[in-house]
Length: 572
Image (cartoon, rainbow, N blue to C red; front, top):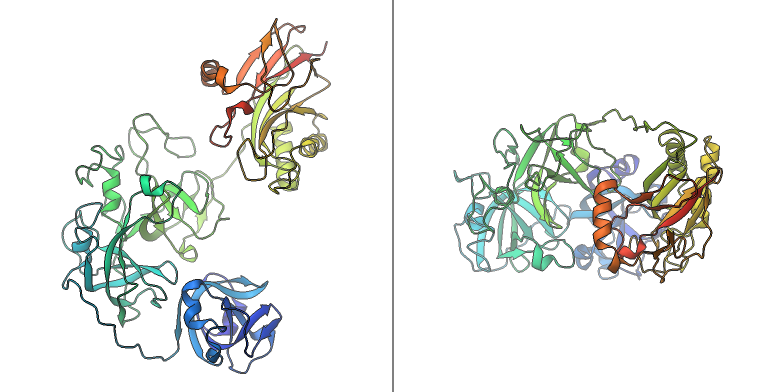
């Protein structure tokens, strides 16, 4: 497409042809003459002499392209006509192109391949083998053929053999690493390089925990394009051509390679290959671009009413797959279903196999009708109502979320007398500025409750020490309480602090509220969490205390001392 077309339709991925006219200073300011301040971007236009900012497209240059196209290093590139493929999106607050996967000089003839020695005559399935590691690991291979099926970035792409063997245990796809490779989807290529088992993105302990991806490292080899615009190898359809195991992830500690039995081996046998999911159903929300899906329900398994498989002690549902999206803001909920086929390439990162897709090729998403549940508990003057509510990293700056939470407290929970809140942030949200108090957040919820016809709640908490209770960085996550002063009163007593452990003596808390010492609570907490989803001791006499501790998700709170008992008395 032309630069003007890219400016007018600045969404999705695209390939743009234009002339390098300068270096971007801002969306309205372009430097067109040397010296240039850095190699981080270029600006292109349909004319080599263009100076009108409205007709110029800023292009981001990742590190893999800077040595060849950065203007500080290569000022003579001004006026060159290039072809660039990448994400069409705002850059410098104007229509731009980011995350390019290929940049080439238009009309440039490829140079002669560098001399390279390696094993010749191998197909991709030979390199992959019937194993989690290649039989050719650390060997040099030469002129391995494939069709480019997915371009990850300017340094990485996947290719697949269009001449597969008949062995279902060997993959026909592979990852190739080549900085500034310049290839595009549909290119037929020959690759020279060293076979490596490489750990891709993961957590800090990934070298000890994660599987490797077999790749050809062509950094010192060649990637030679034989032809372009080729039809991609046909994708295998889950549930028709291939069938993932639905019970077992690994039965033998990777001792045997059994794709028919072990899911970990099944997905390995597809590493780097194109697969298709027909009308997949979403089984959970998107997070970090990962969207869990299934293609069908398995007879004999239990599912939520929305269609998500239930986790059991004996079955972790290995037929569930993750679609890896580029859009971290993609919205989907359990039970939504794609209206068509999702096709992508099997990869692996962060301890899971993923299906890499192009977001702009996804079919439409049919949303499941959603009706929030409403409590069936009927109010009674002689009884108190108590709720525990995970409000997920709440701070009052998100007014939409604030109103949604308050409305649900009133309309769906029935304005409980006491609400134990989980995941309240400090008043500055995720800003790491030493703030620990959260009164503004509680007041915002209380005021919003009144707006929707609920009570004006009071609140109490023990603010954590700065950066000591885990959770989102800078947020100082904690639990706290809202209580309706028309119905209950905070029992008299000394308020605890961040370091003093609460006790229970003579029918009352030693401090109120107080933090529980995790070293003394393990057995009681385990029993109560199983019974009630929260630690709850309720005494029916109005003169006796009610002691409540909301559920704490230990995966989000690094210190179980964040549990806080509360003692209140019901008003007469």
